[in-house]
Length: 289
Ligand SMILES: [Zn+2]
Ligand SMILES: [Zn+2]
Image (cartoon, rainbow, N blue to C red):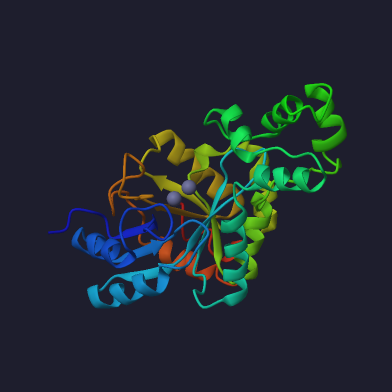
């Protein structure tokens, strides 16, 4: 019995933060009537081969993809990269580095402080943060408590401000770098769930200039006005409107597999953008009124 739409360009497996093995994910999607599916685990293509093999068995065309998290002042900017090569070793190296260093900034700064002769414990910094996301203020507090600096503020001035000896910059890709990484490896970048971006109107021209090819217009939690706004951005910037469930299989995160309508012409449109093809050729084919 088919209960979903046939195209789903945004799904996650256990290889990142989903709940199902890649093959089980494809099987579940196939049962719901999905015939074209992008497996887009965060910062990895590790599930692609298994998913593609399952897809061949079940008649689901699996598009090897990833979803890149970024670090910037623009909020949660996630870049989907379609049609990437799971055997691309240079890409895998870069993704591995990102996975290993994400969220380790404060840990790296603690290591630097210890090496510089200001011993503090990461555990104490985490206690100070009380479960919040770790930041330099927690480090400053720990340094002050340990008697390494005379005041909280002086910790910044002498040790952890930008250009100070224990400073470590945010680890990760900027939105522009994420777009460029996908393009450099022959993939097609699309901006995921644009509503999580802070300052979307300002960011759009920058990431379009970097090579953005799509925008996720069709998304489970998008109200019609958001979809319309994305379609309008797609027309304005010559982008392919993409879409998908963002299915994770746990909690409320995402829609069911195949739970979001994605127009059939989307596939040909994103394929045409492989290898950084110019926008002009496709804008008339998709995202019409
Ligand atoms: Zn996301
Ligand atoms: Zn996602």
